Image (tube, rainbow, N blue to C red; front, side, top):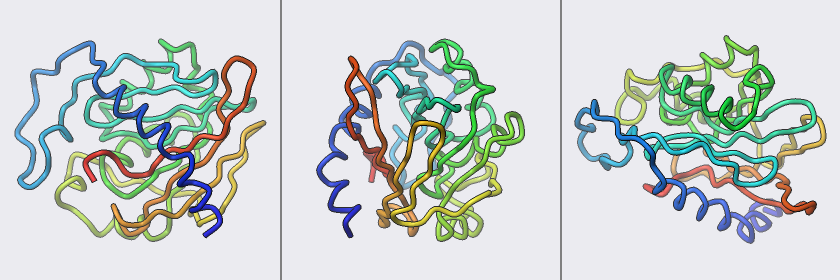
Length: 214
């Protein structure tokens, strides 16, 4: 409960950043198909966003539908989520390069929850860059036993190297990410607390494991 209480005080910042960035598009994908019933059309809007440096060590890449966060450390990159599918991974790779990041430095992929728009590109990135995938045990089961809505055939299921638990700390180089259990959007959804740097100062930020359509 300590970590959940701590998270409530800082989740708002990156949640707002995500909403603001989702309105900054630079291209229009004309090939969209109608979304499945009972899901918002915005969830399937593949319009790319301009890859953006949010803090000195944190970058946002994605589409109006969903984004990933690339957290740069002294020993490589931690990627939070992986978008919909293998096609989206090329957008992630290209976005990293535009931001001056080397995709070969990708070490960890943290999956916030077991919906296809968050795990769909993970296996491709793991296979290409030998990155480790992390997800909660509960949502690993949920992912592998749900096949409709956001968990349809578009998104390949992924293997998981390590299961995430509440309060767990994941360290890569000079950066430690704290895992916070935030179930509700999915049975085993998690959020993340981590340091961000700007103008020589370090702050604690958080990435909410849900999205604005919750």
